[in-house]
Image (tube, rainbow, N blue to C red; front, side, top):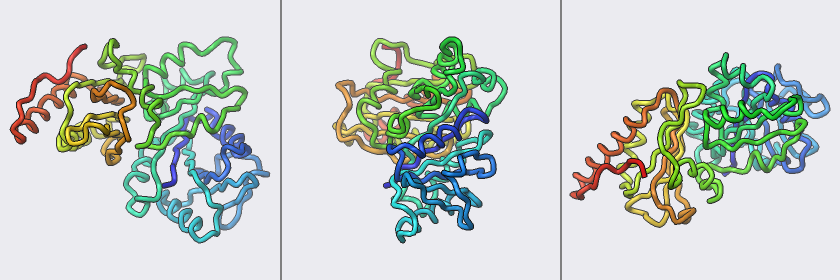
Length: 345
């Protein structure tokens, strides 16, 4: 399947500059770039040339397209052109959002598009953050908070304009989205491989270990509050394996009751029916990917772990939900559950 990345970030945070540089990089070749607001993009004319069909093959092997109507239709057209040989055989798609965009509808379209199933996979979200103006932007604009909260990669830009490291801003970003990997662009330069190297459901064990380290043994679990009290991160750990039906019920209840307030969820779950292969879960708001299965556990720690990021999430409610679901499933299967399944280590 072809991995799809969403590139987002607030106005002036450096998305266009980043794309302009990446399009010249050999590591970024064979990439299709979709721009959702062509009029505001300032890529050099020697890289982008308009045409009636709005598709341009670049010297690097990249392909650029302006979204004119529906994103799903644009993606379907790209795939048809690729299959017919009328577009370069791209191996990756990057969708750049406008600076004021909520990335959630794009991710929903990618997850739910019926004709895209089996052809595309959501690889992740890269969010650019302006090191100079990022703090004020987060204070004033809810869209910027959400762009940070849903990211897999946070790219700090314009650091060369600072007299000192952006320590307060990076700490705030870490509090808003602890699992996200924070990278820095130096004079607008960053390695493409470091930004676009994840595929949902097949993350390398090292990557899993990084974001699951939030709830590693010996560390305090629970809600992590930062400057932005509405958006919190909650890390949950429980020891007992969960039945597959219990995981299904958990995701259904989270989608129904948290809905739009659940900005991001990631998890590694020990399933009773498949103890040697952990299930990776990933979703946002009302939409979840089908669980993917790792070939093996990334470490000796086989506890189930969840990281949730959202507005006004309450750890006590999530832990109570896990306890109630475990009791219900145990009763159905005639198994005595040793509860509670969560708690401080």
